[in-house]
Length: 495
RNA sequence: GGUCCUUUGGCCGAGUGGCUAGGCACAGCUCUGCAAAAGCUUCUACAGCGGUUCGAAUCCGCUAGGGACCUCCA
Image 1 (tube, protein in one colour):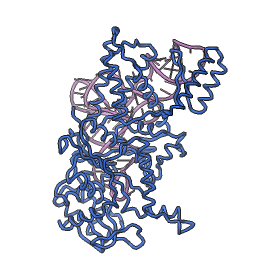
Image 2: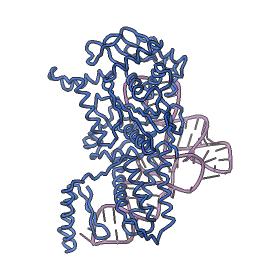
Image 3: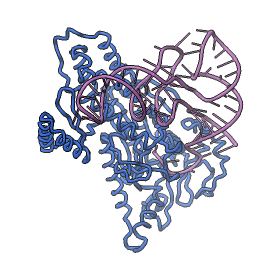
Image 4: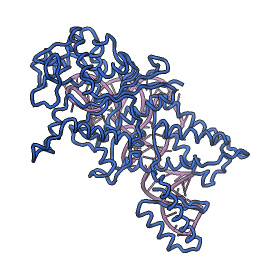
């Protein structure tokens, strides 16, 4: 079966046919490490992590490049950080690279929490100043960029006369030229739609580099073009990022790379939609964002409690990546419960015994379960329809629970179906959707201790000493451990 | 103002013209020392108006609401 993905460039779903058979090159716009990541940022990283995992599952050798933007349009954030720290003492300034390091570390930590696989290459903008300058030089040579007062601008109008500028973002150049916005450096540009490839730096600007045009720093768009070209070549398979990057960032990327490399850079453009809050995009400019550390800890007025990274990952996967996803505490609570229930069933599946003498097979049920599993791949192939995969899993959950509670005979499913369930759930839940055990109590001593506590409670129960058994359960409950008495007389516990 | 998207049951959220997505919440029942969990059942919606069609949440038009991008933005 073949994977289809929605190509933002052609605006339709297309079968994924890699440029080089067996290989897939994928570039995803990474974070600007001038501040802490918020919930909205988590979405592309989770989305493209799933794509990465799925492509790998499909047998492709994937090179996944995700950049770290640690330079350029960074000035103001740098100042902000300075203010916080250095307000009382100017001497306590944060060194720019210190700031960058801090938020890079934090970003990596968050990605680990989300169980996102590390990219194959994670290039930084500051590490590729030379490549960016080389690219700018080429664009000047080609006649599509001009220098003014130490800054270099891309000539959009000239580009548009020959190429389809605006196709990706559905923009019309004439409209762009009409916008009456007052932007910095506007007077230097020949045209309002032109964008900076290199900006001359004022002495106060902290990060700046030597260049053929004087001291300065790279424009925002050029870093992705330079690094993608370097590591994936002039023409590569997939470029991903948030929808809000379509314009001007990705549109500009196409223009730069096209001129520099004499071909359009990307075969499939993929864009994830936004996470909203009260129907409004979560973003810095609206000041309505919740940082990831706040999400995890619950330290935010909009949250009634902290949510585990896996709950958030599951929440994201429950909606399709091209739809907006509205955040609310209530929705997160619902996802949390749902995820725990699903994972519970998954654990039960893994403990099911395959009964070879399956005399009492319920063919209809067996077929149903197999059909639901057949659809996992069909749904994933259809532009990563993770919500549908999850929905199908939930249809299987009652079957599993019923077998466990002996409401359905254990032989109702064929042995091979049970084996398949074990295989498929592990494959999809863990390997492809990238979800992990929410109960991180695999500490051995702790487990043994719990076994003892449970045993003592069982003994009290069998002595009909309910005062003691309830006391144990209530106390454990208070510290966040839930004890459940099972139908077969045993008890289980979850954190 | 321009370009585009969206509007689904109490909430979230899939939906590619025809058969109940799914989750959470609520209610009832079963199981159970109690509780929790689980199972079963109930709740069956597609902004409004008009059109196309044998048949529309799904296609077309209009109206209304919401939003995104046009500036940094995941």
